[in-house]
Amino acid sequence: MPVAATRLDIAPPPRIDGRPVRVLVVGGEGHELRIPFLQALAVRGFDVAAAGTGGEAAFAASGIPYHPYDYSRFIDPVADWRAYQSLAAIIAAVRPDVIQTFDTKPAILVPLAARHMPSARVVRTINGLGWVFSSRSALAYALRPAFKLAHAATLPWTALTVFQNRNDQDVFARARLIGRAGSRLIPGSGVEPDRFSATAMSGPSPADLRRSLGLGDAPIVITVSRLSRAKGIAALLDAARIVHATRPDVRFLLAGARETEGRLAIAQHEIDRHAPYVTALGQRRDIPALLRIANVFAFPTELSEGIPRVLLEAALAAVPIVTTDMPGCTDVVAHGSSGLVVPPRQPHALADAILALLDDPALAKVYAARALDRVRSDFNLDLTVDRYVDAWMCPASAGPKE
Image 1 (cartoon, one colour):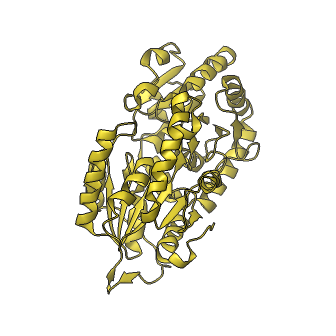
Image 2 (image 1 turned 120 degrees about the horizontal axis):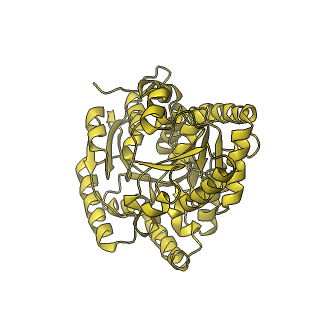
Image 3 (image 1 turned 30 degrees about the vertical axis):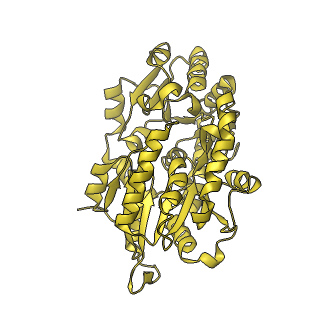
């Protein structure tokens, strides 16, 4: 039986023409991480369905109707056209009242695919500006006008734009990409502290994990991320080399896929150069348990993020955090208060921050406790779902709002 969210202090379920409001939530890869979000909507009386590019088994176990489609995160007009056609067919079959999108391409493709269904209210969430607005490459600069034009084309069929951080909201406002429908600020997609803790405890024990990974009693720095240059992994490897020169006992663990990253992927031989103090674990399903063995969580991204879920989970695991001074990251971690923030692309600064936390466990514990309190109060699932429901069901208040 699927594990469903439970909540007693909820308003009467919203209805249209005497039936539950039908919501289709569209995302990309990793969409299964939003199953608790969908379950919380179902508890509130919504008729929910999902469309995504992976996680079929998890959705089948949850009992939530799921519609798979394919798209590419990279420049691929043929794949984009096929994704558009698939999404149009899914929308026509589900006939939702509200379509909520997450991820970059769905935010563009879905309003266009839904334009023949004017009764559907399309709400797009901009969860980070990504590589196009973060990279310093000539290609990224060249693509920015096309990115803006594509978003501008969606405005006639977009009822509301949700942002996860104020920086992204300001960028879209300056570029006039919000439109008359307005915008809201809703940080993150919501996390469940109790469920996260239960998942961590149900996984392998710290002793078993250390034994299976051959870690002994070494201090551990963990990164959970796609192994991409855009995610700062090259800078992290350089920082690991610097840390190793001072603290040869420290081990770095990288959890995340490399094969999906195309030309931005970190090559295996680049990682191998840092053996044995760096180990790439590949994609893992036991992240909550894995975080229990960490002394420091490092997230060196060079991207403009939305609200990185991995930072929220590291905070829930009470692991002290080092991250970069990028939008989204600084919405979770306040430098010198709930963690350490360093400039992106600066391995020496990253190494110094990691060493500072390793060398002062008492201060690191204080930072971790503050981050945990912040995530529990500001990013919890019930609060996030309530904010989305209010955005969907109160169109008259769809202007800029926190």
